[in-house]
Image (cartoon, rainbow, N blue to C red; front, side):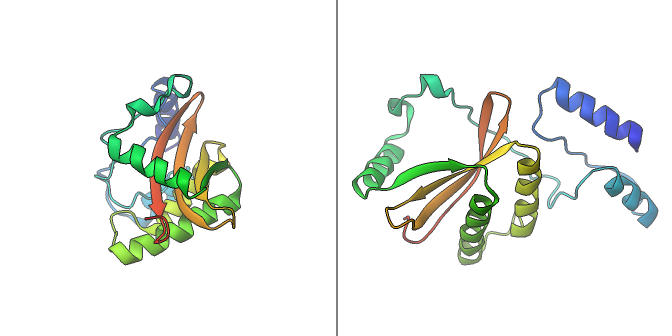
Length: 168
């Protein structure tokens, strides 16, 4: 397992991957699973739940004209309501994100990514200095929406988002 772990780390660094996921075809013996988990791997909720499409933003070249019209309209409504965006690496921001995601998941019956798995995954990114939470709040500090962003080097990827009823 140590050789496999070393290989995964090497390939991940070479390919500049945010994470490496394996779909092992191994017997489900408790001793094997214990060894795999002890070597640093974490369970994935659904093996087929890989990102197929992502958008990487080049912030210095950012322009609102590149945003879909309906999204530009949402930004304008947020501005008119006096909402402010902020970014944080603090654990409290992660907890806020998870809280509104948990509420949204229950309301919309979202179950393809279990909330606690997502929370643990985001904590893992945070521990490695690879995540931040974008939050949208009003002047009373009411949270309207939040997004988890995964960062590697000078590149950031939108990862997951949640919105409150007030944020709609």
